[in-house]
Length: 373
Image (cartoon, rainbow, N blue to C red):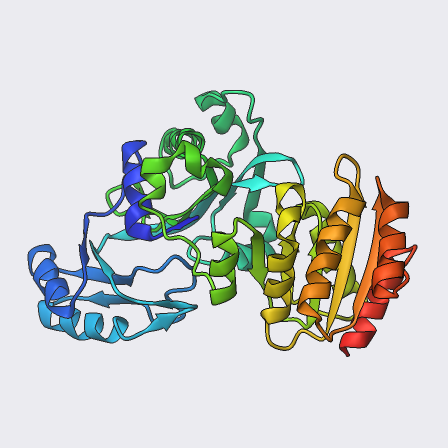
């Protein structure tokens, strides 16, 4: 779950990290009133996505009149898939230098990863490409409690930052990351002000979805992902469905196998139309799952990939075949079935649908991609 900047910054302040003074405004008039009390300010679109500046969603203003004009313009924008309905008005801060600091879940090290760069105000991808030597990576052990000395020893010595300021801030940021179950906690830019202190000018926070139940109060402040009509239907059925842009439908059991199936489709030149796994209890919703996948316009073939260990593939296959017999879809379907109950499942597909299951997953994927093209 993503958080807008105005909801993320109080979490930093609670951890002892300085941020600019700011207020929310939901109209151009309200923005002008805030600037009247602040003086020179920054008007920022509040949407749960990045690249707001490139989209025209951030403006520097020096008067209430200018704030009103810029706020009115920004409130008309759509950034990504999000319409701008609120603004964060912040005091302007004197800046000496900009940096980048973030902690994120890292699949490679299987733990938190701290990233620091002396080149802030840029996307991390741009920093890594343009200034790789300026990027410091520090792997963190989630089971340990690194102290101030840990960060001081590993962060670069930045001449213009006095004392242990950077290590202290990194230490606070990691404590915040742990407390709020962050998947990503990014300060970009982190600035050295003209007064010599470090301040978070922006903050991007993503709450680990698996921690939402553990952080109910916090989750109320987040911005849930915008769902499509089909995704809303899936959510009501407690099915894990994500609508994509391709034309090869996917039905598999288990998130890992579903992702593998999608990767294989792309590998052979196709594009998956969805993510939908019907493992566990959701096998009972074969009809609903099939309807979801085939309701997406443009689906030209369907890949069914079942692999059973504890789950029985014959039970899942029977539910899907019953759905197929009820709905009678016309798109070609390609099965690959392995694991517990596979003999019964393969026989069921042959006798009731008149189809042979593919022994090798790659062959089923290639056939589905070819049929869709």
